[in-house]
Length: 329
Image (cartoon, rainbow, N blue to C red):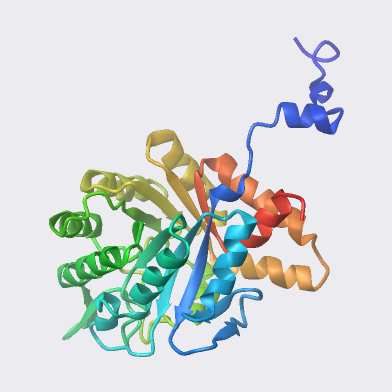
């Protein structure tokens, strides 16, 4: 049957009706907030390309955690920003490294807060790449298997500090298996892995590299991060991570890859994570500052779109604001 028997507008006639049939709901517990922790004291330094996002030192981060938890955000992703870098990223797996100290303090202050630890070497290496670099006759190359050993050591150190989730973002082949094996052997069988399974070599990461001080000093990351043109490859990456023991599958970035989120949602039963990345955030902030858009409306529509596409969890720099807006603040 068709019009005039069928009138789809009947279910849109009031806010009550629209709410009654709404298919997708956003909640503050859907959000995970990235947080950048740096060395020093008294640090609360706004990141110039990400208005409203800060570098925090260990003594000031409680302010941010208090505001997040008060808003209803129940999870954070920790990024350490060290003051010491070297070729092997040794501070990444130092039990007294900045990320490890931050995790311990977060869990002491807020035991119920879910703390995920980003697992990569890029912000800890002096060359800015996500693995061990060797120079050959053909130029500089990332040694996949040697990198796995260091990433596994980092994961164990993060778990030992109290991380609830290990979130490896390095895109080395076999990284989930190496980390799962290392965690299990160290007695952390219950710590889940939130794999950055589908991570594209994207132009949307620019502001993050300022935030994490992680821009590569030469070349790019196209030999290990995915080509933005490829979608079927995402299924191969996700399947590999499932076979190796991943507990979550992440797509990064989110906004330009909603089709990929939907592909994973339709195919796999694991929780799907969307990373609403730095440039996605910064573009909204810039347009809002100019008065061109309604920031609240744009943010909530974007986040509902990611959830509608299939995301169970959204990592987003908008987390605190979005949580407050959802409760009517």
